[in-house]
Image 1 (cartoon, one colour):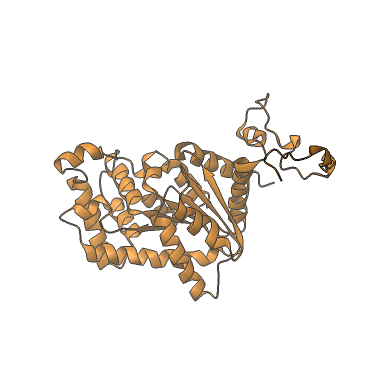
Image 2: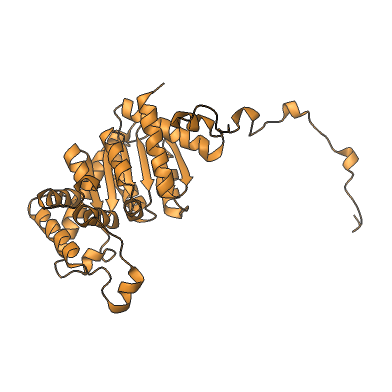
Length: 320
């Protein structure tokens, strides 16, 4: 074959378009705003493709889990709290659309500060210059003293922080605390610390034994909550790129080790601003290889989580 040889397109075999499988149909297209402007109309107007289709599937899975009394585990990172999403997450707990709340240490610290002081999220760069980053006295002392008390009284870290907030007065915004709300609603709430990664570990009141004892108890409590996912539960990873996906994978293998392979056949979804390796593998893919389905829905927390909460509330109000 010479360098100037050309393919003979006249010999190409074609097929009728009616025989070709298509990924998109005109019936699945979005609709512009009409005379009906309800939230349900907005959801119905979304195109039935890609992430919009996945979003509907996750909402439907949560609604089925609520109606079927299956576990719905929400794993939360710190950014979710400091972008003002606690009220909608608390509402999901009230609707039993979250039955277990698990969070990393960052989320717990932001939650604690919002409840006590009504503000959180300091200027890291400014504080790093003079060594004052993370050195707030009230946060470090109150948080650590709660953990030490929790160790002595057999509490998990989440429970210990909630109890400490319940006994603290006055609180600036108690109604905005995820941990306090979970405690009052009887929803399991666990905190999963990473030693040296959280500002409260810098404080003179930090007690490594207490941090380890209470956080490990919460790890065991999370593992004990997972079998209730079996046959229709849901796991949501909201804004934790490393800690919670790693914790979840280990807790899941404990649950399956103790319960003869249960849980299986549940739905997982990673909801974050960007896509990361660990959530994809440890939440979306590996856990559902034995049965179930996983989704990745990417977008800003401050937009996507309210959309999810409103859609779940709508689905629960009208399950049909």
